[in-house]
Structures are given as C-alpha cells and as structure tokens.
Amino acid sequence: MPAETRSDVPDLLALDRQVCFALAVASRTVIGLYRPLLEPMGLTHPQYLVMLALWERSPRSVKDLSAALALDPGTLSPLLKRLEAGGLVLRGRDRADERVLAVELTEAGRALRARAELVPPAIIARLGMELSELEELHGALTRVIAAARSEREP
Image (cartoon, rainbow, N blue to C red; front, side, top):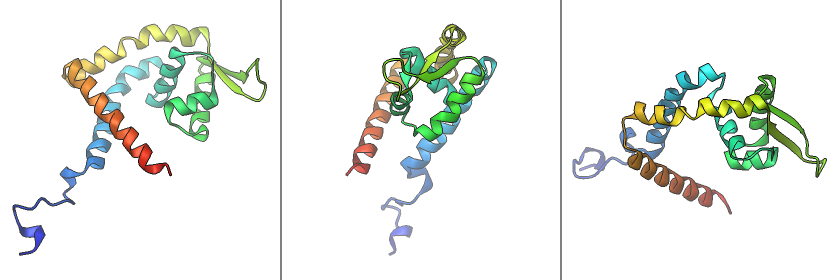
C-alpha cells in the first residue's frame, strides 16, 4: 500500500504540518493586529521595530541597528529615511567616528514611547492568551531562530 494512502503514516507534506506555514500565517496575522494600534502613531510595523530598538538605546549605528533587527542595511535605510521625514529620528555621522552613520531619537521620537507603551498590553488582550503562554512562545521562537541561523552559518 502506498504511503500516501496509509492512515497510520503521517503525510510529511501536509500543509497543516509545515512549520514554515504556521510561522508565516502566525506572523501575518499577529502583525495585522498591530496595524490599527500603530497607524494612529504614524508607524508601520517595521518602523515600530526600529523605534523599539532605539528606545532601548539611542544613538545607535546603522550597523548596530541592522544587527539588532536582523535586517540588512539596504532594507533598514528606507525605514530610517521615513522615520527621519516623520521627525522621529535624526541620521548623521557619529561624533567619535566619522565613518559610522548614527541614528538617534528626536524629542518627538522619545515622546512617542509613552504612546507605544500601550501597544503590548493591547496585543496581549487581542490575542487572548496568558502572558506566560506568550513568553513560552517567545522562547520557543527564539530557539527556532537560533537553530535556523546556526544551520545557515558555515
């Protein structure tokens, strides 16, 4: 009897068994929950991630931001340009090393943090999950990311 018709052998190609599919759908769906919370702040989700990194530490070099966000500088640059046009960040040469492009928050960018503090509790409420479940999920996803990165590195 062929494997695809045997009920005791799982179909390894079944869509609902694919980790990549579950991650892709979860990512799109969860990011979609952020949209109505971020739009009033004038932020897209990728811009929000940049702001989170800058609220942790500002100024930061573009290279440091790129590493923290796991984005290549070519993807990060347009995000920074839009944030700068919106008056939330300033880009300029690092005072200590002119070769380094630094990004720092403006006063408006720092002030936006107070509004952003309302986002995580709203997302938790929208997901309807316990904080402990989300922390456990975060830990599992962090392990998945680390495993995938170590597999790609020679």
